[in-house]
Length: 565
Image (cartoon, rainbow, N blue to C red):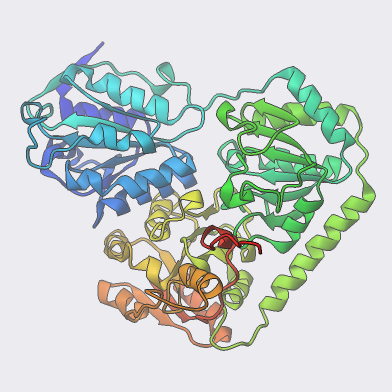
């Protein structure tokens, strides 16, 4: 039977029924009716941050690690505007997020009133849905629809615009509905049976199969199905860009990720593939660059994607299967197993050789005594002491991107990057959100010196909530990625590429955290272990080599076309 309650109480009650434990935002006058019911309760907590961008990025990190929907609540006008990068990040990562965005009062709308703009239109390109609530009686249905959309199919953020005059004094009749009565969450579409039979036939004919595991493997928890298929048909395993945790990295067929600063050995295997099984990946630009540098033109591609619009979008496919990665792989495994596949032993041996070569390469980097310290050596030292269950957040930028190939990820939901968005400042707030989602797992954030300052103010949030997050800042006093372009494409004519910075260890101490400054590579591991055992947040600053700038993968994008004579 419906219960009559204040509108703000109804919002909190619906969030509680959805299992929401944290709301990320900054207190604002436009939604005090929603905050007030949180007074003296512990089942739903409002996490007050220092910038709205940080709130959205924390929510993104929370959803990526927990697999559950997150909630952001900020005030209208500039508060909502500041969310855009974080909401865009969730959109690219397919993180289920619900943004509650109060707007100008209805009587003041379309008059350029204070802090008024078209929030619904602004968020349409970076959300699965963006819509207003026009009367208070519709608020419960609107919130339930938001969660329904955010958690269905290929998940993503949804924005609900709530005019600020609806809440004060408003009341609704709220029927207590469990979420499974109005949304199903992630369904397990098993794919078309005929297409699965066709894909099995292609796989059974493969002599040099390679699996590319993407985000769909993570969201559907299909790592076991991927590794079983690799064992069954003798396939190399690679991952798409930013998804190096899609499968356990200690699997003998794993060769690393494709894309920017990708694994040399994984790339070599992909180049030789006659069949590519792309599981839960669209084979986007950051993974394959839309050309044939990694994906052979004559390779047969089997693509499994929950979004039918992505099938064959970037590369022609031999078989395209719409469906959930885990469910489709289960059916595909069954079909392949019945045929008693016989892996090509020569290819299996080649994969073993590539895996051994990758280990030698990484071990060699870990003994590099060059000074200043190279980022590769930093990761080599940390690889020895990093806990197996650690959650790692890598910012955009050169130094953090080395970490995809040079750290090991053993558990699902262990790696967060800004993916194709490539946005600086992503990783630190995302790491804090991850810690709220998984308080018992170690969380380690990696930044360059430039990227950390984008959201450095959230260190105050980490101190306030006692978040035990370790941040490693590799300081090369430059914008490394952009400086690399100027080095290789503009004859080292550096403009705006160099920076100066504070001492980040002192920054941590100033905010009430713990700081470490490490100048010798042999001290990195001990400093890291000490930081792991420190109460509250910490920063380890490591000066690194500003001249360590690999040739950019997209160098041709900034070079003028060459004209022939």
